Amino acid sequence: MAAAARKSARRNGPVSPGALIGVGAVIALLSAMVLDTHVVRIGSEQDTRTAAFSPESFGQEQFPRIQSLIESRAVEATELAPAALEDKAAAAEKYGTPGGIAPIFPVKFTGTVGEGRSGTFNIAVDELPDEVSIRVQTGPAVNGTELRDFPGDIGFGDFTNQIEYQNAGSGINNAMKAEVLNDLDRESLAGRTISVVGVFRMINPKNWLVTPVRLSVQ
Figure (cartoon, rainbow, N blue to C red):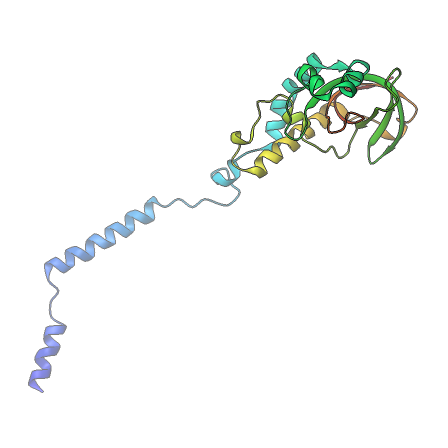
C-alpha cells in the first residue's frame, strides 16, 4: 500500500517548469494560427478560383480588332472562288491564314438569301462558279473557331487548359453575335439581298460556311 501511494504521488506530482514552457509555446502557436486564418467564401471576390479566365470579357476585348482585321483583308468571293478551285494551296498562301486542319479565308460578297436551316442560310452570289456553295451562319448558335484562329496570334499556350482555349472561341463568337446579329430578323431573310464580310475554313473549296463579322440587309 505504501509503495502504491508513492508511485501515485510521483505520477500526480508538480509539473516541471520546462513542461509548462512547452505547453505555453504550443498554445501561443495555435493562437497565432487562428488569428492568421482568413475565411474565404466560395464565389466571393477573394475566391481565386472564380477570378480566372472570363470568356465574355475576352471576347468583348478581342472581337473589335478581329473584325477590323477581317474587313481590311476580305477578298471578293467572285475573285477567291476561281483561285481556290484552281489551286487551293496557292489561294491559301495569297489570301488566307493557316488554320490547323485547313486555311481560313476572309471574304466578302453580296447575294440573295435562299432557304435556311437552324439559322444557316444558303446565299446565291452572282458570277460565282456554279460548283461553289456559300452558306452563312446567322445564329442563334454560331459554331466554329474561325474568328479566334484567323488572326494567328491567339494560341493554346496563352491559356491554362483546353477548356479555356475553347471558351475563348465561344467568347469571341458571342461578342460577334451581340454586335452583328443581335437585331437580325431571321424569319424574314429569305429572298432578301444581304452583304456579308466574314471568314470560313476552306476544307472543301466548293463548300463555304461563313461566320460573319459584318452583315447588312438591303
